[in-house]
Length: 417
Image 1: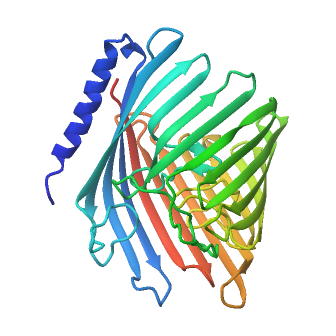
Image 2 (image 1 turned 180 degrees about the vertical axis):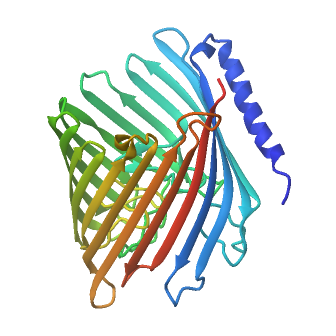
Image 3 (image 1 turned 90 degrees about the vertical axis):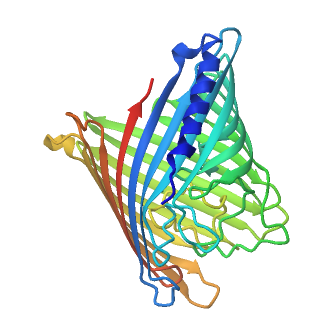
């Protein structure tokens, strides 16, 4: 393995220098920085006999440094944030490469390390924030993926304002994406897997994704959202949701989450999709019982930027049941063992079943999936706040890959200042 520490040192030095410069503007007192450690083992057993590779298995260590400055004084405040990510290969082989934890070379072999740095200039006036640079959006039209060693990031500009009471508005434009197993900024394209049957024309990628919309808190228990987004030349999308929480007494509530999206082409695709989803959850004590239903219709499946997560109610560990005309159910149970005197220990089980998916060849597409997530966060002692997580997923389908998957993740966050 090649020495890697030299690549990480410049990232830390650059961030330290940036924060030191900001300190001269008397904003160091509001700054903060942390280093997140992420140790990740992943095993995927591909049950498809026709797959060129039957198994992928890798182990890696991630370092995620983030520093956020405060703002300068005055009607308009200015600041600068810095991030530096690095991934180290602990175990991988040409036969087992492909989990998405590590960056590959031209021969699809895992590199010993990969790293990236990002900078974010920001300004604030009243309750409005302008940010330009490397970002990790978590909005319904664009949800960055953070399910591997390093997170997916986007380059662009965004504005968030909360100047109107109970209204949270967002406007953003992005021109490049950096995938979770990459160090390069690239143009964006559309996800085509999962039975979506999406076909692109001459234009395969875009350098402009725009979004606008927000969430209005109608009452303390009721919120409504609407967003418009567009991946230039490829698709346009309208998204809406309504979330209501009904208190039922001490430690109890009933939550209703309704979502709808309409996606159409923007000149270089065949995208045409409507999706409706509804999730109902009952919380009592340490338990949350949930059921969800999702239905897609149209000439294609759901449209989203490739590599991202999405806001569908049946987004799962291994899929999202976003295929053309696919109908799916989810049955879920969450339990917090603090109710039994074991704080820090949580368990989630969920089961999905999907059908009615349109296959390119004749026949109905069917899929089922089961997920289990067991997490424990150490509550005291020298290892306080160290988190251990086991994520198990199994899926079987007649049009997607059959997969058995395990992820073992250890995380720890170190405040630096």
